[in-house]
Figure 1: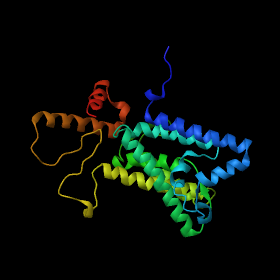
Figure 2: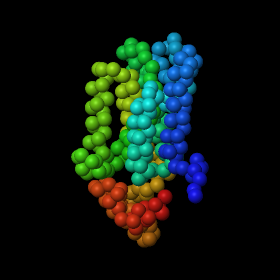
Figure 3: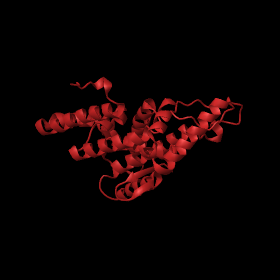
Length: 264
């Protein structure tokens, strides 16, 4: 009989477990000791009011681990799990952590700045901004990647991204505008991060040397002399990536998945 070991679980599951434990403890505390809960919330949630924020810069990270309710938590964790599956088609564990945490911080900064510009005083909790950063990293890297949806069938992920953006923009005029600002901030960061991982650079940042990347996949190389064997491997990888872009990861054969996995 197998025993559960946290060491053997994947990184997205570890994130989900950690966030869920902290969020559930705070929800329980809200019921049994409201005053203590309020005190902790003022320390850990991200407030746009400078008097409450009071330069507690850790709030830009800690708000990710709190959720307003069980439904809020479950939805975000499900999205993190499914978006992670898409993310690992192209990227690795370290890049997921960067996309998630840096995206969450960027989402918080975006919310804080815009809220103060428009004079909206509120607070935000939840990992949704970080989760959107994970998804939009994939969108920025390969917007034409296709996924199978139950109702709509096989669609490119940039259509899904446009729906998310439209929904968040509309919701800015209704309740929880702060949460949707965080979504937009995470989306912007994720898209830019995906472009960066894909090799895009602003002209002022370009150098004569090609920047290093730790992507799982092998990108198109510049017109330099390569070994014949390397050219053959690269062509096969390009064919597989093209197939993923058109039909999704699940369309690969077992041999193609094994071959792609060995190229990490």
